[in-house]
Length: 146
Image (spheres, rainbow, N blue to C red):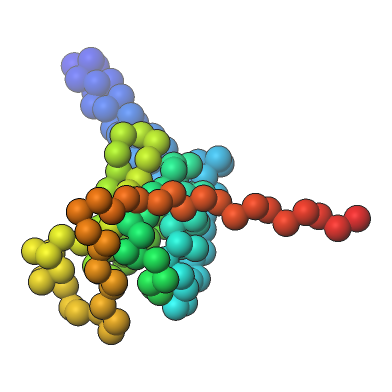
């Protein structure tokens, strides 16, 4: 009679502890506040690269495109990453992971673009069948003044 109670208590405690561990943010991933209003897509993707620790490659047809990504406040790290992806997807920008270390951003396929509201300004056409992605390199950090 005692063993079923121990088993139930153990199961309950493990589920509560597992839930608490899933809810608590990792100290290595601090919460973020995202405030990019009408910002160049390359800048948003640089920030995305910093959050994900991945190389980001952008379709040159997206150069100069402006997007707005603004969270309502401070959000957990993982939620910030998901928020950027959802916002870019809604803007007709497809963000795809390639393995564990690279991300490719391109204009969404025509099928998906037909389902999305049309942007105020259409993206420039791709430059033919041989177009290439370009890497969104991080900006060099400013040198500290002494």
